Amino acid sequence: MASISATSAIGPMRRPLMSGRSGEKLLIKYDPRDLSRIFVRRLSGRFVEAWYRDLSWPPITLTEQRSVMRLLRAQGRQEVDEALLFKTALRQREIVDAAQRQTIAARKSRELRPPDAPPDSRGDSLKGIDSRKPTQDEEGLEGRRE
Image (cartoon, rainbow, N blue to C red; front, top):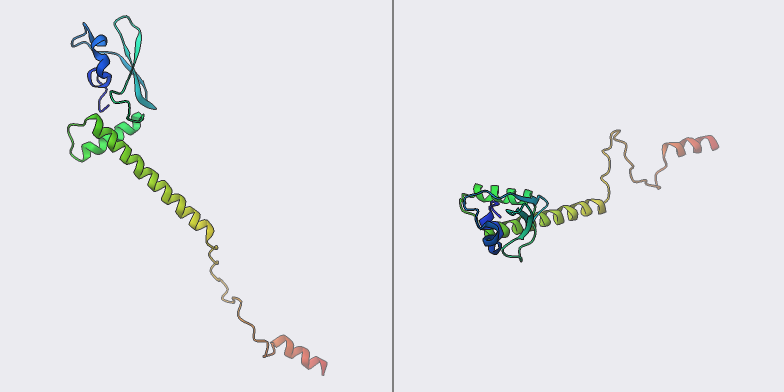
């Protein structure tokens, strides 16, 4: 629903809803978390539920719809139909899902590698010990024994 208008959003239900209302605005209400259903106020004051024309499209949020419209306008598209809107929304979802998978993989990779050794601030890191050579402490002990 590129723009919520009674003629494009309601589809086959529009004749009974719009009878006698030429040029008159309809009150349309919707849940911004799910634009797959909208509610149109009839002349009697009661609301009628209307769905997408093509029920195979998934529900989208108002935020997704606006984001897709901004993207398509930025690409220079002036006319946007339902198919283009939903295909673009699904493509954006795929991009987000792929980015989440990459983020999860990177985080797991970081968690599995050993921690980085802290930089040696004193410069006296552990060195290999050559047991063939006496250390300074051992030389001092040998002198006392004699």
